[in-house]
Length: 533
Image 1 (cartoon, helix red, strand yellow):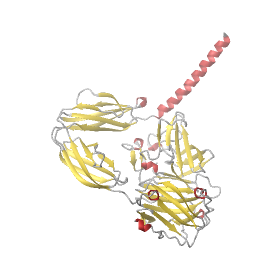
Image 2 (tube, helix red, strand yellow; image 1 turned 180 degrees about the vertical axis):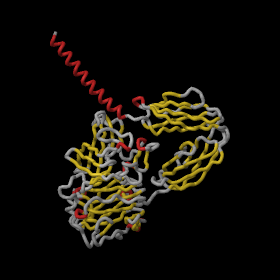
Image 3 (tube, one colour; image 1 turned 135 degrees about the vertical axis):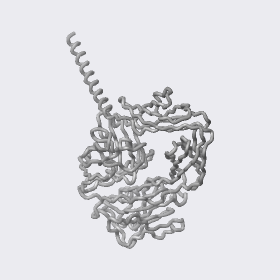
Image 4 (cartoon, helix red, strand yellow; image 1 turned 90 degrees about the vertical axis):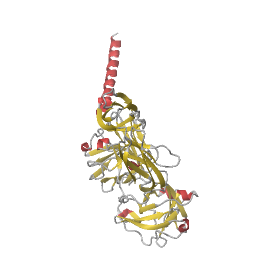
């Protein structure tokens, strides 16, 4: 009986210990939870003199909402995320109070002015502009007296659904093709009568880049440069050899942006570079690098051409409306039918669309074309990394085998993070190269979350360094980060001011050191990132 009693005591103690550990993990998780942010309210009024308004609340980090209509009536409670409520207002001005309820009993409130009048909207003013960053994206702002919201019919065939926004806010739409469209704006209030404005507007492709390609990190002693302002280029290079591509409508010119020279290839079928008088033995090199900007071309075939044994091609995917930094291992060429590279004299760039027989494609801008190798003894981390395009790129979950809480793949709706670069330089310095925009969130002051100007200190301005072991990589410098800036090795940030001076990530390399996987284990969950060169 005493043995049984001791056994039961031991089992109880073990269960109590495990329970305490699980409770501690839950406490760690709840301690990292922040109050909901970026509260917003969309008003959709019925134009029938009824005073009926549909209210749709939203917020980051909210699990449900309460709404005080501001007219003395009973409010609405426990509204689920993504749902709406309808309420009939009398004529007058109201302050609608929204309470966003989050985890751990953390709530946030915001107020919204609502003017209800049964006068028809007047003095409608509409501003329509092409987005300065995203091709074929059009932004509309409408203001009017006595109006609550407006609808925009963007006029693209096959899509008759309007985009709705509150008066004075922005309604946006991305067209599938550039062109001129009839845009109709309808300002609505509680009155039956509405105010309308219709105009033909041209949605354009942002063909030219607005910023230069990333600065190449390689030392010139390890480079054979074909075209780059940073390096000394080889002699005798011709950047528009006459291979008959002009007959396909293709053309070229040099393009300069803030003193930075680059090559512009328009109506791309195939283009190339030729240095027949000065063939290069690139057998000691490990990669070929190109930076390519395009707003239109989806895939590019890159061929190395040998004087003695023909050409071999490798296809790569381009990110539209941003620079794509391409580093192709030389082995991807030499593994094709015993291809040799001791007399490379041409490079061919060909649209995959043209290769498939579907005609010439759009325009590309090309910079920093060179072969390179890693210095002896240099870490395989050295180079420019971006989010991996193959499979899951970002995720968080209870463990590495279960990233179900949230995950993201390139092309999943955050283009401004897809093209961010994380650069480990051979001299031990580290750079976040974000361009003019990246993904910003409520804890950084964004409202709502979305693509926007980088926020200090996570804006690429950090004077950062890096170091690594076989299984870890450490970034030193306030604002330096990999993947998600709010995630550190001790928790998640609630304000940019708390950015730490260093972060250590667990890491592993694969795919001939061209794939980098990192994670941080915060006890209550694991954040995971995957990058490629």
